Image (cartoon, rainbow, N blue to C red; front, side, top):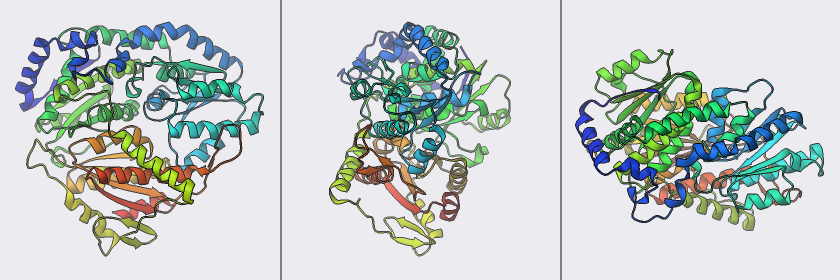
Length: 562
């Protein structure tokens, strides 16, 4: 297994006591026996979510089928693939593509998990080719974003290759009996991969949802899963390193150190978005939660509050962050250090963090497999879309300030744009009571995801982080609704939420049915319904929310906010 070191400082005693409890209660063997009572006395949404434990054995039974499929696709001249999915269906494939790149002769993989019309249009322009394969990926088979993507690209591809050939450009990955399985059959998709239904979306990286896209870019699945097997074997010992990571996460969270801050080698940075969903959606409920922080600028120890656990994951020959991490250790911050021998140990990390997360959930007495608050925003969003279909318009909010083309929607009124964030940050909880925890700031950006926008958001984030000594996250909407959205509404309520919604340069219609032209809705309507729905769900859960409506000049306007 990877080289792992835990330095937990003043929390060592609580950690040691909980490790003894883990051993005395046979937690590890009970997890491997699929004993749902580790987390709850009721098996609902646990017993049918433990298939991830069998990921390696099941994967090996699919290797021949996947290899045959990849050879067939390559032999037919496909050069590109576009995966259409959200959350657990899209995040692992994105990590594979960004970390491994593309082997010579394999398919260049892109991911679409944003309903922003500018993002959708950019993918239409990029993938309008006879050589693109579309992977429609959704566990439930009915995810509104994914099915909307599928209908749009199905119609666009008809225009390119004709009705007789369009199905040959589409494959599905889904659960048995899902709506997508039926759609794929009716629309003559060339293939449907049926995944193990007993695996939840965020635990599906080592299932077909992750492995099929990985194989298409040239990842050696035998080597990849072989290293996963080593981690699995080690994790079955009653006391093991993975268990220690999980117990540390849980014990520290119970002590108010609930911001797990990832420091990653440059080559491994894409892993952060995947582990963010896993931990946030698994642990953020019932008034509790462990907040994963990924992508933050690494600052000096004095610029952090005492709610941080740092996780330093790096390649063996990468010492670029070592000095700063040592300074954090010397200042008394708990640190977990994990060293990679090679990029192929990524698969082992997928498994290690899945196991560590469910163990942390045992420590904090959380059920890690459900997502009770995710549906809230979906229900409100669907209600908004129904309203649009009936009335031809969405709910219109009244701004509290309109300056330089930026509209602000807040609880309190201020005279100038420059005063908005400082006024909003008066809501911050500085954590005098450690158990209640400190606030964090979540920037929710319903904007086109490009490098310029991301740089502007990072600049805003770092300014807030330094000014208020507070943990910060960035989530692009609506993809974060399938990731951190559960924690935002289900945790202890320490989040301060900054919504940024941009105008779109273009709009793209969503066909009512694949293969037919009629359309009653566009992606711009869907995006705005989702933003309004999530804002309403946050407010319903007594969260502090501020919204900025900006123009299509995203970077410029974000720079004006603070």
